[in-house]
Image 1: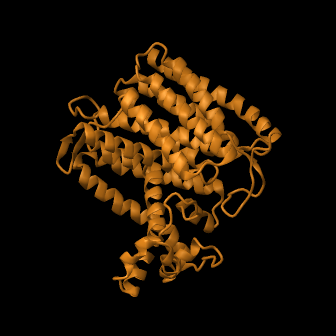
Image 2: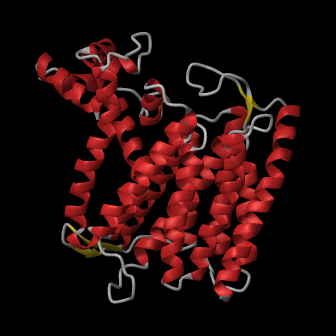
Length: 402
């Protein structure tokens, strides 16, 4: 009961601070003209204030620090330092725009703080490819990679109203429930504080009219950082399979909980690389953009993706005993099919907007023409000279349908 009171208090404190601070941030953003103006990639028709991540950051740090005041979590100070670093990087990017390389360097620095100072890292692969405990170097490299991938996944996911916030609340709730029932209250407090902080922002982001706001990189980078820390702890606490409620195939289960942000990020980056573009170049080739092309509203697209991700968790947790490799194969096949459905419908119903370069990717052969027009700009294009035109078209067409 005492633990429930701490969790409830942390959630309510974060929620109240978020609900109170968002309108304040909106007034300041409007006064300073820190607005997201509509462009070819924008999901809004009118200028909308950014910097909603300020409210998420303040409410999460305040509520989690207060909630953990009577719980031992020595690495908390370094977690907060890493979050503060990403907060200011996101803030500067929202106001002045940072090059992708500088953002990546900041993410690497935050990862270094988490790995070397907080000593939060992966130490075991849970039997993946027959590997259990891993060495220090492998541990560091793997942890850096996962942190960078998750941060960028949440950053790229923030494309339509409520999507990044809604999926973050869903994932944090799932992790938080497991931490609570297994007695790891300190990490459960982190999760519920994050849910409360996001919930206040979600209300204004999705249902706000006069007080509508976007989280910006200020929010998405913070969410990705916190979520990466939660994922690492979830994996590490499941190494001992003799404890009650231990989850087998933990790496695969973690991937399943974050299936949409991780899979969609891998998908769009793979497509960009195949087109010899920077994987960090922004476009409108995400799954949520395809749902919008089908006529979905922002709310409908957001709730459809969240509901699908939640339903996906049922087989993931039900099959967690079959092994990491088998579960990953299942998720790749089943998840890959789900990702293809919107593109198949767009293609079959001939809803492709031929003036939209991203939707042109669904036209057979267009990928090869795009590749051919860009190949002189990249030395790497020589790798494709040995491919036959038709086989390359087929490969890229299937890739873009995925």
